[in-house]
Image (cartoon, rainbow, N blue to C red; front, side, top):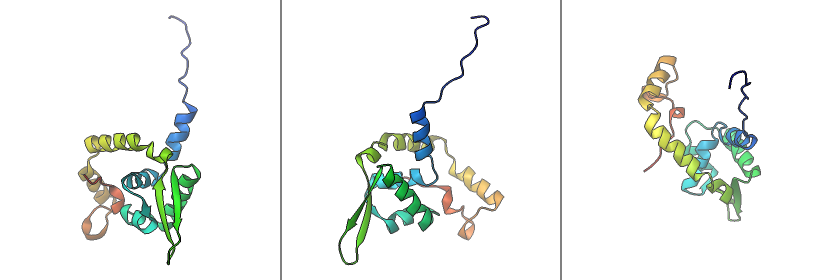
Length: 138
């Protein structure tokens, strides 16, 4: 139509909120690991390259407040704390799987390692920093 003004696309408020929540640094990795099994804090920390205790604690608290993760205190000696996805959190399985499939097809880990080396972001023994990847066990 000649002379008709184009309407700007509208961003869905719910989509924007969800992408901001799930897209925060480390959140996807935490959900990825918890989709496999419930975990104690140290297991989660060890499974996620380069995450600090503080950042893991902050993200778990945020996810718990959003109803995505549940924290269970097991009254043993010593006390044990486990984290697991709630039904709401498990509802992200298809989205995480889609991202994982996309990454398998499109992310070149070797290119990422070359960039890491060229920018000085190299870990021990000349390997890319552990931050580079979270690989899926198959």
